Length: 239
Image 1 (cartoon, rainbow, N blue to C red):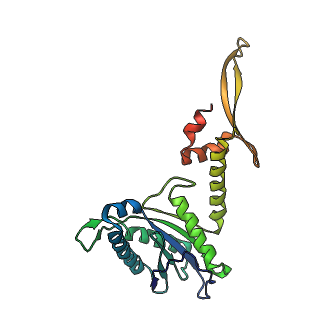
Image 2: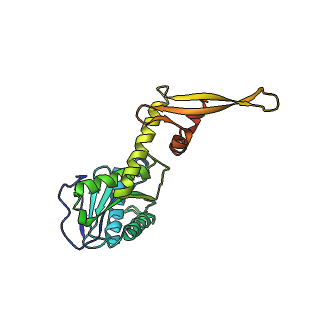
Image 3: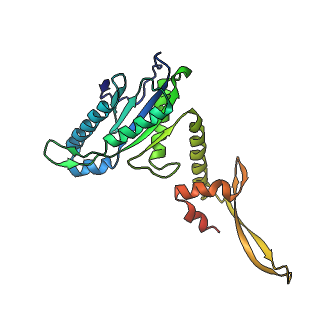
């Protein structure tokens, strides 16, 4: 097991040849780190993070690399794992390693829960390590609530298939946030006629999004995104 405290967040060396399987990168972020530093001080916080890093190193295998990054994150890059199910299982073990409280040198006990962004690629594709690490950062962004529901104390795993879906989902959310401030969301009112009298009985409000690239979008295509991003109330005010 290789462990270091280098501040570099990426490494552009190609993944070396080894037995076939999935190579994975896990980016582990400490929840509420700023609050922890403000409460116990930077030195104690670093000591607590070092303890958790040791636990993470003990959780993975000897051929896996564990590195502390700038900003209080831990990066783990694995050797070959037989299946994607094994990647998922390792992510769960890493999350569990952060759940146990940490006993600090001054005798205090602190919880150090982790949120993890995980990415995997089949090793035979020869993908760059930097690309894999970048995907783990994207997964951590999603796990922290951008592009979906926040998953504190949990993890998000993306692969080469789901990566495109995640990127599209993030782009949709960013576009929607912009649309709410640029009059792209429009409400149409459709009359509902009473067949017995031939009179308009009521109207139905229909919201539409005039997307600059995706053309006219119906609610089914963007309201789920709005709900997950916490934007539903802003759309409701436009109707």
